[in-house]
View (cartoon, rainbow, N blue to C red):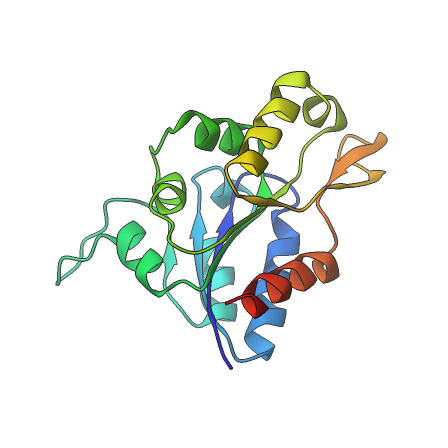
Length: 180
């Protein structure tokens, strides 16, 4: 059965892996809507996601529509699951604090479906006690967290913070969808 999956992409070099996630979800005949933060667009152009998903990419809260449709609300009415991959420390901090100042944070705040968050950041940021506390708060609130992996980071260092593998992300999405 095809599902509607909302994939949020935040500003991380790991955004390139989100392209493969969308591609693999599309091969399974799902409908995928991508929501990108402004910083994500500095790493990957929305045209890439539009081409692969064959769907509109949401990049802003304020878009001109012929028919009024607040995307962040209407997406939630159709979404079977919302996945944020990669999720930066900034995004995680905003969600924990209840800040909804862009299309992606508004979408998450209005979520009616399960929300999966896959952090990706430098090891120093990921291991920061504030970030760790924020991730724990998200877990306590019912968000599903896909732990990052240890490996080579964009700084050249090796440490924890690397976005989980595409296979792991797809497995967790599948697990959540099977619960529905």
